[in-house]
Image 1 (cartoon, rainbow, N blue to C red):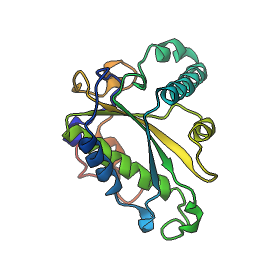
Image 2 (image 1 turned 45 degrees about the horizontal axis):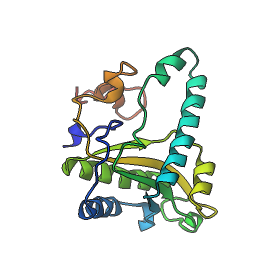
Image 3 (image 1 turned 45 degrees about the vertical axis):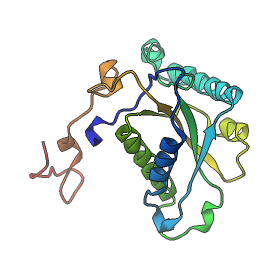
Length: 206
């Protein structure tokens, strides 16, 4: 199942996710490990169509900013489908909650472990969604502050992900960015070394 997880952008429109299934997915996310058991996540379910449209507008604005920053690949990037906000059955925003500065255990030298913990929760949900036959896509094309203001987040809270969730036409056998000829996944052997950064691990999986 892990190898079948995909970052989905294409969803079957006008579909729903049963409440009991959504509850199972959120519980799977909440079961994730977190540094110091701080549970730094907050999940906001978007059910208002107007709010969904405003989120889409924020993402589309950043999509064009990203395209411009890519220079010669601008047109190529704009041709990609990078989100399914309008079509997905469920839209969720995941945020780092406020008050995180109080949590020192495991974060004194690595304060970013709160984000690592939230990422574990999202991955749990991603895998649970795939097990339920649902697709999920993680959208990160947005400016955090305007999205935080739109959703009335308190000071100190920070949105880190927009999750598109729902039935999909099919699950591709390769990552979408490979199918779109944007990038190619590299083998595990290139990411493993032994004792130092540069020394390849002679026993690395190839």
